[in-house]
Length: 262
Image 1: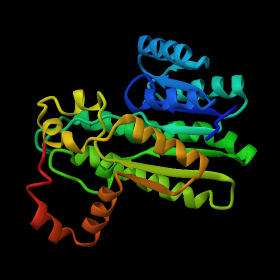
Image 2 (image 1 turned 120 degrees about the horizontal axis):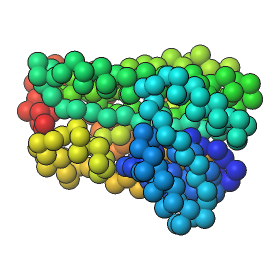
Image 3 (image 1 turned 90 degrees about the horizontal axis):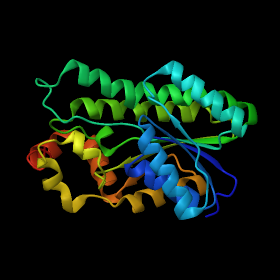
């Protein structure tokens, strides 16, 4: 895979899967443009990429839930680079809680970042892609968007929304050369769960099932080389969620306790 001269914008790029993606993009010759809220983390990430790969990774401090800031940031990116070849909407977070105990501010926060932030970034870059009739939007959704489990009702709802947006936009752009893809991973070994799972119960219960960031990153970058409508990671989990959609009552009756890992 050769990403030479590709401008790839990654939200949530200062740590976790976002940082792994940025490093891998640079290793394959592309230019990762890093977006995240923490300037300090972005500086460290950019410095690490330069040290490891020799690629200069521009970075912009951005809270994707701030629509005005999103518009300004993407205007700067497009002015500097003239185009965005790939947008990877990776920014997102979860707070696992029962529905009755979930705080309204946490619920709003997840929707603001996971859904409205993704929408804002996509709308900011799409006109330029349409003008060039070229580009790829990759939305990091989740298996949780297909199968909601206890204590993840809100997070699952945000990822279900991401899948709906992705699928609809893909069909709207069917007559263009712009690709739209969804990535539906299961749990990944990243700092994501430091915030999502403060009790540590979920991490402990699913530790053996957690995906390595390098594996997920490679699969995501393969989408750039060979676009698909969606990928499910791991594959067997995608089969499981499809089975649930066909036979929800049966799955909840048989696997109900197994789904309650939080």
